[in-house]
Length: 389
Image 1: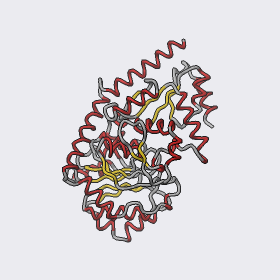
Image 2: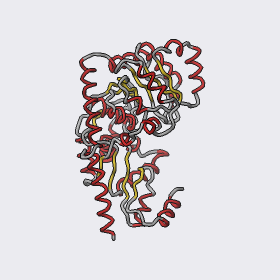
Image 3: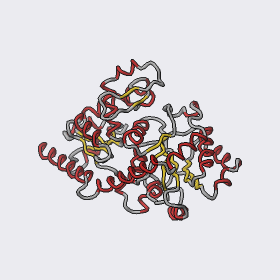
Image 4: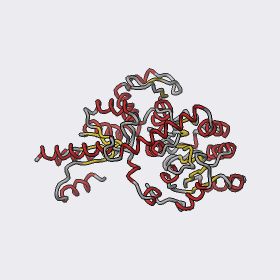
């Protein structure tokens, strides 16, 4: 649907573009790049840990047939670190079956025939995975993240992705009233929906934790029912002194960068995972589907900056109600305490993620690894353009 207008646009642009940079879900751009004799570069909104995992599992796809149970854990072969998954937890793109097969085959072909890859990560975060993925791509991998740090102004941070549903000054004032590192921020993404029964357990667990929190609640088909429960159950009244509910889009980067925030309950989408780490905030991981279990493994098992909420099974998009309650209120309370408490492990976890946050900022500063990679990327593109001419 987009291929023809994009190709027509290329015919009209003067001077002609030197390359195409496109998302992996737009494989038709490979044909356009070939028609115009320019390189196609993929921008991946994933980490190299996940990209390498997908590559390895595609190479060893038959290995999955030897796993008898969907609950059985297996170790990814030829991986820099030991990473254990169940079949449902591996990224969907490795499972080319059913209605997704044609889409996934197109994505796979686009990935294999692209000139190179841009990744929203930084080398110091996952050096072994950047190194090994570069080998897969014959060196044509540029880590340029965290891209969220490109937003320097407060309004840009507040409205990253959409217009915030709360005034940033109101949000900052609420956070200013809380002790440093005391607030848990909860945001489970903008795509997948938890069942109403699970959201109730999450809310009750947050209440029983006795920790101040910001909970982002967005609209979906059960939205009115949840709001009704929050009000009629007395939940809103009971937590009004220490809980802030945001209905809609939140100013996530502004919240995460505030000194009062000491934890981030996240669905482990890569943007959110990286934004939490960049802000020096430890993670409470609640993956739902796709690459999110990979991101959880990286955060918890490799980087050791996160605590698992205890989710074992991947959700099917649009069938969330079928899965029911994955973590009850006691499980939520326990995980929050493990993350936000004062144990030696929690203190060490906070120190590690703060150090990674500092490295993230250094990476995008002049002379940093990501800043340098952008220069190298531009040099490579210009070199290819000169060769063509």
